Amino acid sequence: MDEAQIRKIAKLARLEVAEEDLPRLAGDLRRILGYVERLQQADLSELPSPGAPPETGAKREDEVRPSFTPEEATANAPAAEDGAFLVPRVIG
Image 1: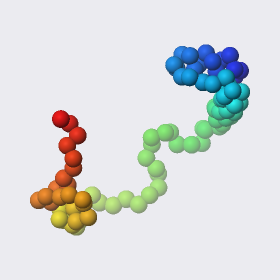
Image 2 (image 1 turned 120 degrees about the vertical axis):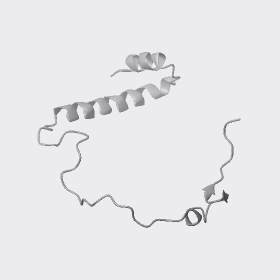
Image 3 (image 1 turned 45 degrees about the vertical axis):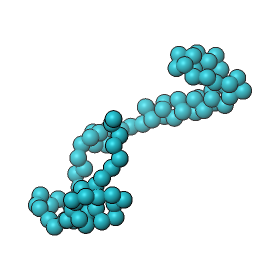
């Protein structure tokens, strides 16, 4: 990646890049792209597919267990009423 390519990418992304920053950005992007190339060459055949649940881990029954009461949950809230958090209005 050279400085001309950085200028072109910055223009397409509508980013302002100072001329003095171009050499550093070009070096940073070369290192990032080199790392991506190394990742693409890695042998991932032994890894589980992405998103697959882990094979190990404790499993338990899905059951209702004791939890906080609404009053306990809102005890440290800046503002609460009837067991609910009060928050500032964000939509007019």
